[in-house]
Image 1 (cartoon, rainbow over the protein chains, first blue to last red):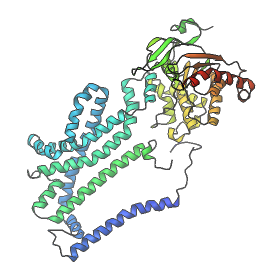
Image 2 (cartoon, chains in turn yellow, green):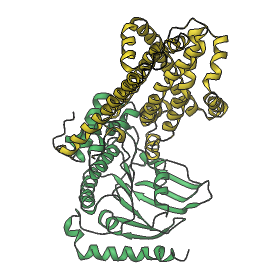
Image 3 (spheres, rainbow over the protein chains, first blue to last red):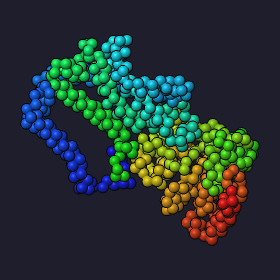
Image 4 (tube, each protein chain N blue to C red):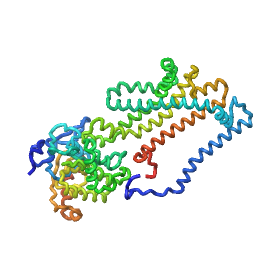
Length: 278
Length: 269
């Protein structure tokens, strides 16, 4: 890691109770999950509930395997929309925050509209977007609308939280606006930006799903949300559950990836990534 | 002695800093400083001492050019023909004010980077500055891995890296424990003896001001004015003998007495 000859804080051996606690924290949710799934299967079997009312977890997994080719394709479609919406939100949010930071006039003129866009429920905007935009574009725009605001507001917060003395230091050494932005403001804002992106990841999935459901009746969609709607019309409940399972898994993976990126970027210096020991 | 050409901004020869009737009134209407007159000779070690909120830091920020005076004139002697990346003034803040996201080396290199100094020359100067403060082995550490005293040393190295003529220090050791502070005091004196920089040192510690400086300027509380000026004539180089000598105790008593009106007056105002 570093070439420190005498590290000021030597690494202490982890206390055994701490390792045990960690194991418990991982095991407990798994035990709860297993118990829940078992109870679910048991209730379905003991009460002879037909699969068109409530399928058991085994039936859901079976459907997942049998319908995998179609579901996998839908998963890819949804993921693609999500990622595109997320990238658009990340770029849009960060660039807009930077512009706002450089020009107060721009901020005063545009910020209220960013808020309006955020507080208007996207499910109500989606049908309109589908009328005016090609479907694939409309879906991405939906994901963008939902996801860009946390990036914008977090980045703005970060850019405004720069240490006052460091700002003075940059001023003293005659730093240009660009230098101040690159070497001071952006690194200071990085933890905030990453926090915003973590929220945006989950939200862009929601945006994509909302848009797909709104577009679903138009028939051209093939994402996971469309599968859920379609399976609902056909009373194919196990497939609804299977698609839901995939959506949920996608959300978890997106969050996990972004949390990992955030941890890797911040682990050497930011309090949030350093743990509680020191 | 000194070359007048290099001191074009000040009227008098041999002055590094000269303040004339300088005042500072903040937008909120608070009169923080002045009118204050202050002359600091080249190579002199001067302490500004006073109760908190007496405008010492404000005076320092004005000298550094971080903000303009409301009235009066701030004169700072600039060195002619300085090398690229050199800067006339080094500033050490009360907090270490390091960038937590990058290594000690990059923190110290910052002033040179902002001045677009050539990389090779910058490397050499960073190494030199880190050696001067005794942190050569910690160049690739991150600020959070260092103790409070070491962070302050990094901050000092960063101020020295441009080889400034004037070093402004704003209560740099106030947050440190006494043992660390004593050690840094000695190291600072050694640096001052070797490098012969002009140092203006803001502190609220009587003992620190007497130990370090050739001249102690005592200021009144808000708005900060000069209330007394005490010259410390001690045998150089100063060391632990001075800290425990009767002369040192005498100066401390004298400075404390000079300071008394400002803290006894606080209860009345």
